[in-house]
Picture: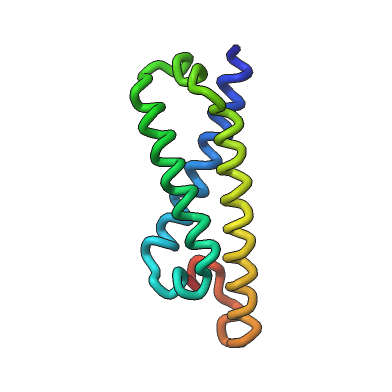
Length: 113
């Protein structure tokens, strides 16, 4: 049971880290929304589901109770996979920008955004 809890926490931490990163990008930049409408739509869906899941988890203040949430691990892994796809598309977009504008070549992703 503790192994299951650790796996859930590991997935949860990764999903939350990715969500915080992507939230700042998509909710903070109208340009990114316009340039990547499919990823914006996908992230809105992920955002809604993640926030809903966090609300369900917050109603269960004990860690072991959170494990009883139906399909918790599967949901976290699916959200994680969706955000990986979104991040890859964002990386491809930034790489295209670097190819189009050579002065951006030496900037990191965070600086370019």
